[in-house]
Amino acid sequence: MINEVILEGIVVRDPWKYMDDLFFRLVSYRDSDQPAKKLDQERDAGDYVNVRLKGGANGLIQVRKGMRLRIHGFLQSRDYRESLEEFIQKARKNQLFTGLDVAIKEETFKPNQVQIDRNLVEVVTRRIIVLDAGTPKENQHKKAGSVVTVKKLEKESHAEETEINTWEPEGIPDE
Image (cartoon, rainbow, N blue to C red):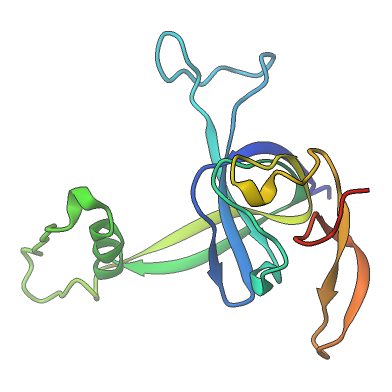
């Protein structure tokens, strides 16, 4: 079966790290020949997706809000269980809900006992092309559309060149 994704979008929030992986969120607006997703009378809404770069938390890759990227990769889904308590903690991170208080009427259950099975679909990237590096000064030396292979760290703690992960790392001069 074919599981291949090519997606172009804009990074909409600062990236986050989990273990050795780097995550960021992209918004992609549909081409005019695709079904519309209307936000209002004049504008279309974007489609949002999380992107996972395996091994990207090592600092070789600098992704920031506002960058326009083209991602090549594949879809991956993960199942997990989330408690009401965990959900409320996440909601409280939003300034609108800092004082959120939820009570369960059934006294035999506590918020950490009420759980739901969840599913997450993300794009695992193998290649990233920077189309627009954004406005920060440290990115002004990068050329849009340039692609460079980076070193992929192996489990044995040595590096080898690979064609799978591509990016324009910091400190490498433009060709």
